Image 1 (cartoon, rainbow, N blue to C red):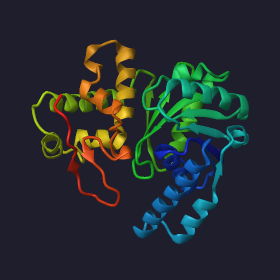
Image 2: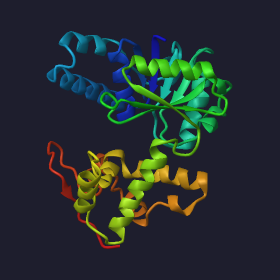
Image 3: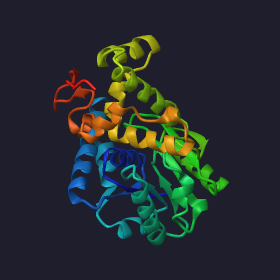
Image 4: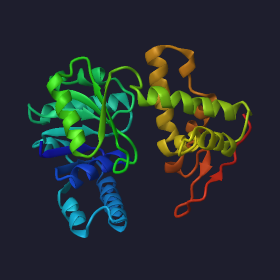
Amino acid sequence: MKNITVIGGGTMGNGIAHVFAQYGYNVVLVDVAAAALDKAMATIGANLDRQVKKGLLTEEQKTATLGRLQPQTSLQEGVAGADLVVEAATENTELKLKIFRDMDQFAPAAAILATNTSSISITKIASATRRPEQVIGMHFMNPVPVMKLVEVIRGYATSDAVCQRVMDLSRKLDKVPVEVNDYPGFVANRILMPMINEAIYTLYEGVSGVEEIDTVMKLGMAHPMGPLQLADFIGLDVCLSILRVLQDGFGQPKYAPCPLLVNMVMAGKLGAKSGEGFYVYTPGSKELVVAKRRET
């Protein structure tokens, strides 16, 4: 594989594009919004500058990486020469199904179609295509240039050859791929999201405060980040979406999202990306300030 197309210029999409380009692949980054592409390219540039400052890359490597990136607003043109397409759009089932129908129509017949979904069924996504054996999950972790794990998720029809190629490719990116099967939440979010949800319930029921809950998990369980801060980092809307996938997929009440989480998402308090979740986020400040909230 030499030519990679990434669909979606958001946090995950620009991170995935960054890593592929850094490791020598030609990358087309597709987003329907030109402004989103401009922001994505600026983010990649800033992250490369950070790597240079830390001595992880040279200026020459940074320049070469940027030279391998091509922004594109047309999906049809963006996937036309791809060996692998990685979809990293919003965690919305209908949107992903539409994108995969389009990818299947316009990408070369031999191209592998991957999704970075964190919870949606690979088998369901593959059903929107005429090549289900070539559809697979590549669930990168955020921030992509830093985190080593890639969950490689096999759909019901994913071939052994495609799975092996994606596992090998992940290793070439200096990642650690872990093969998992296609069940709601896969491994990472099936374990992580109930923990985050329980932390939100612990706050909701008045057991303790935001900082206290996070401190217990950081100092008592050696977590680098508390679950409420992590939820803010992921995006509370994303957490809610994944919990609903788990609840629908397993039909068990233990996956029901906490009412506080539902209310916060409805109120637009989505975490770091909206400026407020369980904490308040001020541009340029690393200080964590607990957000004020109404008693519920």
